[in-house]
Length: 167
Image 1 (cartoon, one colour):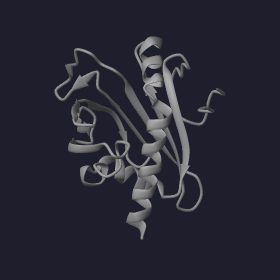
Image 2: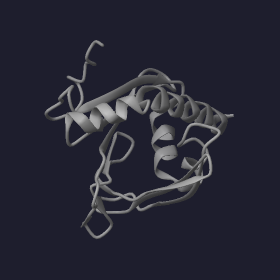
Image 3: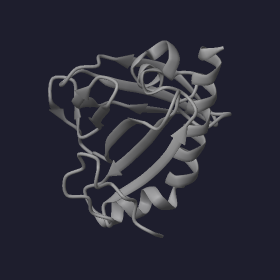
Image 4: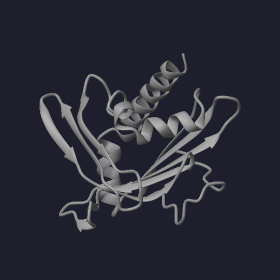
């Protein structure tokens, strides 16, 4: 696989052994894509591949604020607790499950997500999602779980949801 061109983004220390990347141009404006990522009432509609669903969501979009979601995947409840590490409105979000609110370390952290939102023309967004892992083994596990297909499906759902908000 050809490594993505991340030179124009603030992505320190990109490492293809640790970082999985999905990059897409979405047919919706950057501010709307960002709003979908930062508003619980919107995020619950697109954040996991259907038919799975988000059953709870609490977002406190500020550095150190909670980024908590709960999913129902084929009847299994999955809780994902984390915090925001960086918030640049309409441009960048960084969050991790390595900590929960109050900077409490997680016993088994999985990844840090780095999201970039760039203008890609009128009402279009270049969306870059990076999943950074603590080890090559964890990155491989995430890739084998279907990172590209799953996050790609979610990007498609995000685009469709945002387009519906534009109508």
